[in-house]
Length: 115
Image 1 (cartoon, rainbow, N blue to C red):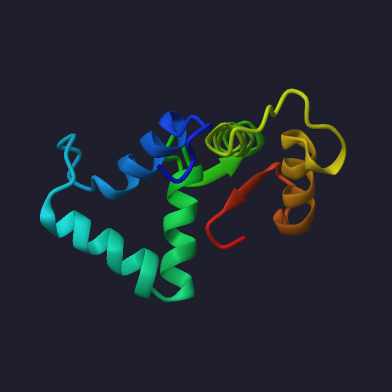
Image 2 (tube, rainbow, N blue to C red):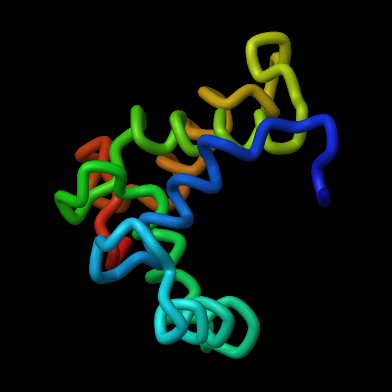
């Protein structure tokens, strides 16, 4: 309802996987309360941890450029933006490059939780 023209499918699947901590395929009451607590009341560290989990698609403890672009593209779909037609600093690849340049302290083309 919040994004009537957008496609929330990919982004919602990522967020769902983060909150479905027991991997049951359902969000039970405890997982729901935890999700609400983190997103509305959680401290910055907990919110950053949750964001990292959304971006770390292969769960290897790092976010690489491909994973980051994948999530940014899913956000563009959610917002009904045609990410293939977005150019310049707002293109998904430019956003990825900008984020990596700013936060990838050891220049390994991946972000760790610490970074």
